[in-house]
Length: 223
Image (tube, rainbow, N blue to C red; front, side):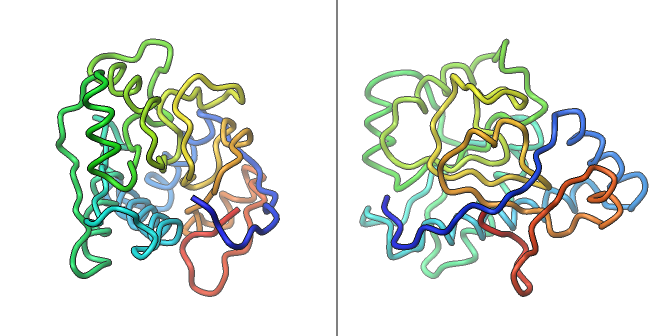
C-alpha cells in the first residue's frame, strides 16, 4: 500500500519487557487503573490507528473484511476490543472474523489473501515466549509469514523477541505500540503508531520515556 505523504519519524525512547511489565503494575497499583480499563484504552486506540492507516475507501476487496487473530493473553483481549470498535466506526459495519480456525496449508493462505483486506495480528504479545511457541500459534505464525495482504500488529509483531532488533517473525506493514515502543520496535521500518497519551507524567519521567507531544485531543500519534 502506498501513502501519499511521508513524514520524518519522531524520536521516542523504547522500553524493555521488564519495564513494560513494571509500568503496567504501577498503573494498576498506584494510579488505580483497572486492567479492563487499560485493555479498553489500548483496543480503542488500535482501532483508531487501523482506521487511519487503512481508510475504508482504500480497501480493495468488494466487502470491507478484516481478519483479527487473537491470542490467549492480554494482546488477544486488546484485539477483540479493537474489533468491536472497528465495527462501530463505519456504516455498514466492517466484517470482522476473530474466530476463524487457522492451520498451516497453502489453501488457507490463499483463502486469507482472497477473502480479507488485511490481518490484525493480536496473537502474541510482550509476555509470550517466542523461543517455545505452542500450537496452534506456531502453525498460525507460519501461515501469517506467507500471506500477501497487509498485516497490522498490536504492540509486538507475533514471533518477534520483544528485546531484539533482528527478527524471525512476521513482517507487518503497520505496528501499533502500546504505552511506549518496545525495544524490538526500533528496527521496524513500516507505519508506526503509538498509543500512550494516558500515561501519567511521573511515570514518563521515572522511565525517561521522552514521549512525543500528541496533537490536539488525539489518543495516538504516528511516529
